[in-house]
Length: 110
Image (cartoon, rainbow, N blue to C red; front, side, top):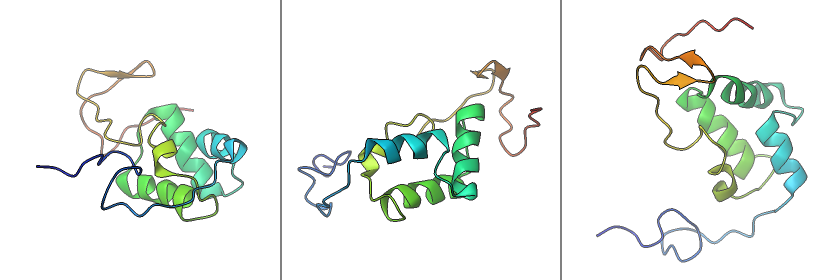
């Protein structure tokens, strides 16, 4: 048997109940790569343009959202496509670019 409400804070017995900020302007800036922090903005730009980011980059932007400067719920971050459990398969297109299955390196001309 799993943990009830594992995918959300409310009603989850093992999740600390945090009084998150709900600043939609800050959330939009984070999602669109306009935070003013170059590392975070570059990662979110890559996610938006390429549809994937390295797992360590995912950790960095998630920490920035929840425990860094923003204090916005991970549940809001979960709604941003590509951050939670989105895996691509060979043959699938990402924004019109065929995915070969090799995610270690993909040249992307800008």
